[in-house]
Amino acid sequence: MARLFRVLTAVPFAGLLLLLLAGCEQWPADPRDSLASIHERGALRVGVVEHVPWVILTDAAAPGGLEGQLVTEFAEQLGVDVDWHRDGVEQQVEALQNFQLDLLIGGFTAANPWQAEVAQTIVYFSEPGQPGALADHVMLSAPGENALLMELERFLFTRQDPQRYLPHLRESRQP
Image (cartoon, rainbow, N blue to C red; front, side, top):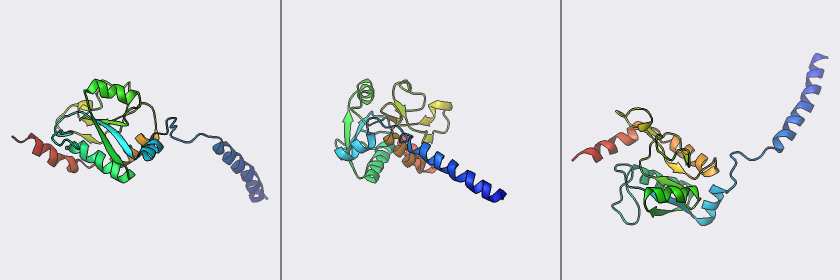
């Protein structure tokens, strides 16, 4: 009898739960359809600021450096091209705030001065020998929680191995 009672009370509860979940908005909230827009455009719009070894601007077509390589790999995973933008950092932060850029790379740390104005990724690398947030490297994204940021963070999470970055850091610091 007790088993029958549990089954009968569980069915309405499960139905109610499904009804409530059906009314929830998609998560993350993505009012500007960030990821869908990138796929429609066929390109990820990325601002670049030189900061060796993270971003190196020697090639006119695409930046080198660790972050240039990561963004290129990310775009390949998405199946889109990268539309690289070069300008001053303030102009590019403003373009990011106005959704004219999707990402901004330049060796930024979690202690960057724009953290209240734009979104930033998870820390994908902590530089040894630096104190706290000055060691924690992030990429900048358009403000607000969005699908692009979530997808980029999933990508970066799979690449958080410090051994991936340390050889590049050593090479770039040799005279």
